[in-house]
Amino acid sequence: MLAVIRKEFRELARDRRTLALLVVLPMLLLIIFGYAANFSVDRVAVVVGGEGGAALAEEVELRDADPAKIHIIRIDSTLDEDAAVRLLRDREADAVILGTAVSAEPITNRMRVFVDGSRLFTAQATQAAFVQLVGADARERARDAQADVAAARAAGERAEGNVTQFRVELTEYVESLVRSSETGSPAPAEPVPPEEVTFPELPELSIPSFDPDEFITMLFNPDLKTSWVMVPGLTGLILLFVGTMITSIGLVRERETGTLEQLAVMPLSPSAIIFGKVTPYFLLAILNMAAVTGLGVWLFAIPFAGSVLWFALAALAFLLVVLGVGVLISSASQSTGQAIQMAIMFVVPQVLLSGLIFPLEAMPAIIRSIGYALPLTWFREVSQGVMLRDAQIDSLWLPILILVGMAVVAFGAATVRMRRILTHGGAR
Image 1 (cartoon, rainbow, N blue to C red):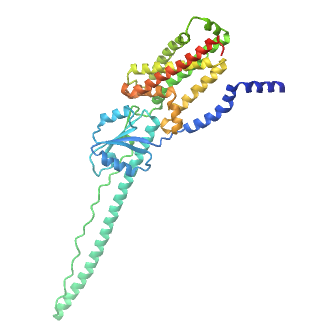
Image 2: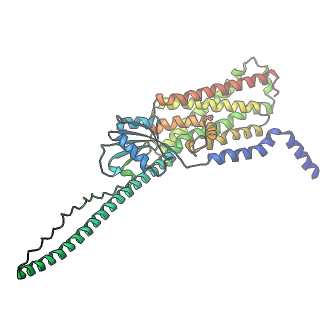
Image 3: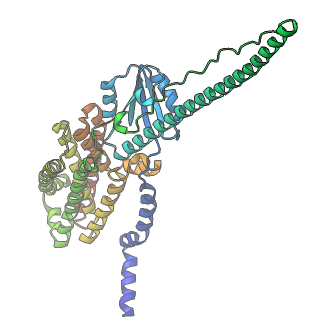
């Protein structure tokens, strides 16, 4: 038995990839995912507009209990409701405040807040921040009213004291007047009546509404449904998992069955071989993408508000990235087990660092940069934008272009790797 144990340790030491997977990867995943696992959004980008926008912005900054939460990035008095919707659709801000004319009314009567509901955790943080803001306004108005009542009470007490003093002086005056009439002495001086009391005007105490629906309009996901936010990204994750897994074992199967040498002597270029092996998976992936997307929209009642064309373009680019990475993994693996291990190492970070579960805005900058290097991050941007926000190409061209670039890089690297393998007769 000891001999078998020593043999397994020696084989494990020779397999550096498996050794790294067992020793280094868990610590790396702990560090990365430990920092990524954060639902708290500490900063909300806000644009303020409308007739009273400038004054309202000052009031928001003054009363914001957590200055790091509401971050005003722009003030534009020309903004209207349509412009606010466009800003949120293009994700130039997390929320837009439209203010009315300056008045003494509660802050909820002087502003209307529009929030991007397709960013679930950011929308929840925005809603909580503005409820706190309304609470601060209510507390300040209550303090002002309390101060006015205290001033009125003090004025009343002073008036009561003056009246009492005048009553005493008047009594003494009457008594002196009676004595002077009896003795014939000069009449006493008349007492001076107290001045007219002026009470401070008590303002009408209007308590603002604490119901967010009274002053917040949640766009693109009015009820903040988790399924509406998750399903557009889950369609990509499902295709990522299935496509990478199936494609990654394709070339390995050729190596394990001994048919890779036959490919090496065939009069085909490496790119032609890759194209031939990927085409069946690509066609099946297109059918899967259509089926998964249609089923998700139907089951969860998700509104497909945007253009099918832009979604299809991004989906095709994303599938090419997935299949290209699968071929690259397959060409770098010696066995099915290794291919599956590498595919899992590629898929797992996409789950946690793409913004599908944890918001990218809540991640540290270094971890966020890793998320931006993942294809699922950009496909999720397009799928959510098209399905929920009716985003147009002017705000989708960058993610689509990045996906196309990733596909070119993945297939380019796979072609180079395949050429090297075929040059050596199918050997690694």
